[in-house]
Image (cartoon, rainbow, N blue to C red; front, side, top):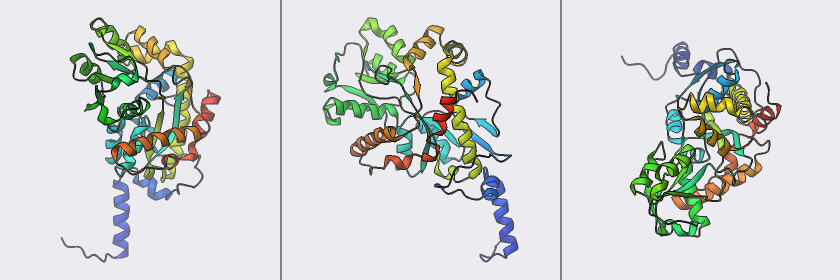
Length: 351
């Protein structure tokens, strides 16, 4: 049926209302209006507000601490982690909050998806407690970063491991032309298996894979070395458009505070975390869980993001130079209205 472009006012109003009702969260957005990105954060979450959150680790921590049911809004938990999955879910309007490292917000912005960081967490001793080590394949000799020259190195553009490789090369005084970068996804056991099979000579490996790799292949000559760089950023980020919904902006504020309390709970309850998360949820051994708790060390949720933004700017500049993308202003990636939310909640500890 043909409909005239010039709709009668009454029909137009009905159509707008119908479209708002069909859109995810549309009733909240249109009923409450649009929140300016420089407006004070609302502190009251309206009834009927819902967030879709991709932060599986925090979900378990909140279950173990008993805070999982204390939110004033509804949460749908999405089993999503990592930059590529999170960005895809953002684009599909299927996610409100994602938990990632420092690269996904940069990559999302470069690919036309405006996002903002609303929470930042680091490690108290980031050099002593690195997230990643450089795994060295059996039969390959790499004792210093200078020895990376001529080696095949696993590389995952758009993810933290990929940026770490570029930073390591710069620290070693090398460029991409001095090595062979082999593009591989950094998920699961891909990197350890690529090392063991000789597909690559070097790969950044993290978490329990560090221990498992040397335990399983150490007899064949597999080793790891420290890279000596900070690799500890952990962020919550959201689409900029989501922050323009006052109901969701208020709910995100509440979630950030819970996220920070969960981080403190994990640190203060290591044995419960090992048993409840690493053993029961992740299927690891208690020994592996203890190794990961010791590896992580003490969390740091700063009330001032200045240093974090400066470090993020260094990462942006390196990536821009290496990828040919336009440099971004790191501060533009952060919503400074949330700067103290996580820090204050972490300091207070209990709700």
